Image (cartoon, rainbow, N blue to C red; front, side):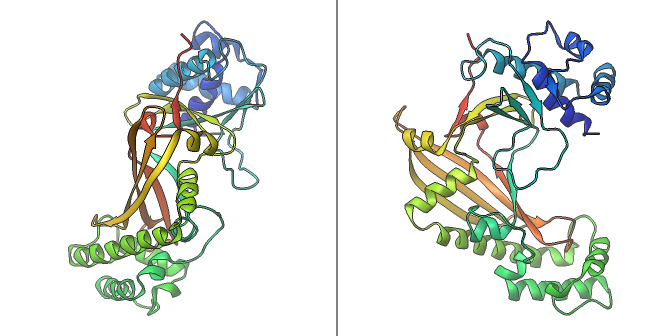
Length: 337
């Protein structure tokens, strides 16, 4: 069974496309024209709706579906011929477009609620390959960019925990070693290690940012990186969701062609920040030809272990700090009026 909150955000958006009087009527009808939604899933939705669980998500998802149905960029007031729900299945490979619903075999809808994360990537994919090639990496990024300071810090950690039987080099840690360290270091770093880790983290962040800048030194490389960063694809798709304050989001993600037609890329900058963990800030400056004004897109990257301290290889979570509706390349949906 899918996660209830996820099922609500995605399927209720689909129900909102069809013109039912209200959500209660739509749920009672249990329409079969949303592919891949069976009675077990409708039972799950009914139970959540009756209990008031995820009431805000029900409300926003229903309104977002109705908005797309009315929008001139969407269905323009007509009912859809088909709606297909992707459901909880795993994709056969990496999917460039994060679609949850497909409408009329053409419109791709991504239902995104309560998240500022643009994408998860391996540090090597982000900083060495500028998001151009996605493949599994077992590289310990912290050792790759700050081998001396990270190794010295690891030695201090082992001494502080008093654990025995650990290898002398952090790159030699196996799953059992990592689990021992994770359990020995819950919560924040101990006060005795905090300052040293802050310095190591800043070196990791600064070096990571410099590596990415070196890899996008040409103008064309910077422009292509921005397209990948914002997840612009060859075909447009739509994001229907809500921000962290549950304010509705509804916008069309345009294509690189659209972006280049309207915006002139001025600069791309990245820098490391002292933040207690490896944190890279990023900023994109563009000129909006249509409005004859300059615009800024900002965000940050958190480089961190995926499962607690020393737990697995580090990952890079890319966050968008600029409000979605203010991002160049994201076009807000009208309400069809």
